[in-house]
Image 1 (cartoon, helix red, strand yellow):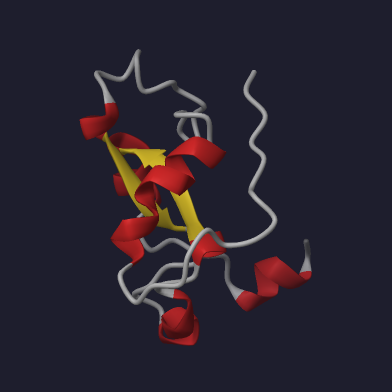
Image 2 (image 1 turned 45 degrees about the vertical axis):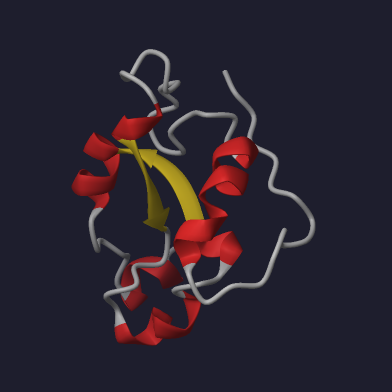
Length: 95
C-alpha cells in the first residue's frame, strides 16, 4: 500500500493551482488519494485530476483554491464521486 508524503514546503507560489500538478502527483506517488489506484492501472496520468480536498465550491474554503496542501491527486472516478462533499459541522464535531 502506498504511503503519501507531502513535502514540507510548497514547491512554488502561484495563483494557478494547475501548475502544482507535477508536484502533487509526485507527493501522492502517482496514486489516487482515495482508492489508492496507481495511474498505470487506471489508464495513465490523463485519467487523474487535482482534487480540492476542501471543496473550492464552498465559500468558507474560497481562500484555499490555490493552496498546495489542499490539492490531492485523484482518479477521475473518485474525484467525481467526492465532488463537493464535506462533513456537516455536527458530523465534524463528532469526529
